[in-house]
Amino acid sequence: MTFTNEERRILMIPSGWQEPQVVINYIRPITPMLAHLNRPGDKRPETRAYVFHGTGNLDHYANAKANGAYFRRPFHPGEYLDAKGYRVKGYIEVGSLGSGGLGKKFIIASTHCICDRRRVEVTIPYAERAYNCGDRRLPWSEKERGMPPLAVRLFGARDPVDGKMKPYPNSFTWSLEIAMNDELPNSSVDWDESCMTARWYAVRVALAHGDDLTKLPILRHHDVTEKECPSPFVGPASEEAAWIRFKAATIELYKFFRVV
Image (cartoon, rainbow, N blue to C red; front, top):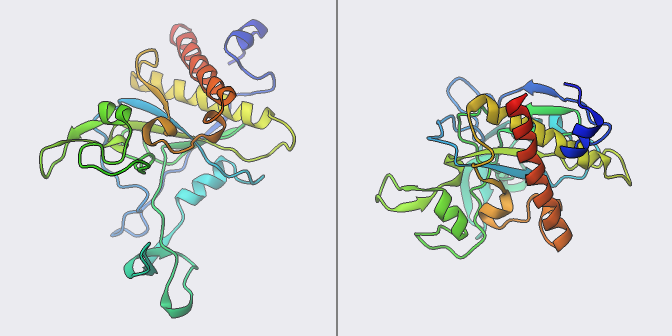
């Protein structure tokens, strides 16, 4: 779609941004009998919020395609040391086996998609759960489960075992990672255009699935778990203001496409 200069100004579309390539490249099972740990495959009951993340990797090559490959990386059974130094059986990173037969624990994490300046890499279908914001930063309790009040309020559900209300954000969120790779050194163009791709794709997904972004919460990972993510949108007043502008521009873009 072509935008006029006035539309670009109102919708905060960077001057050089172009509609990206959308690549469906789902995380696949390791074998017919072994699902990938990063894609549980179970369905989300509903969408209660859109959650934006930042990849945190500034490496020049850490674009959407590279991050997608990271989430799809293989693993195999092995042993590793847990946080207390105990030997534990589980799954380890391929190629990590070292002395004593110990490897590096496979870290489970995933997202529905990753966006950079020119590409959207879709790794998990919209309707499935992704392991995108289950980490906990606050003191643990059975009610809050280490999460802030907003997460408790938005993502509460009955525990299937004890029947108590507890927050389960991964079950109720659609997630998107914004690539933070420093593709254009000493320039903010790469970040600005990646953010635009993220806004554009979030709006596209919302319209396809009937999610009203004027009503549905648009959140940072930080809002759900207090993790500093996406880091360019968390911290000093200027970064908090940048998040407010990003969120407002996403809503305006949604309203624009809703009537086009």
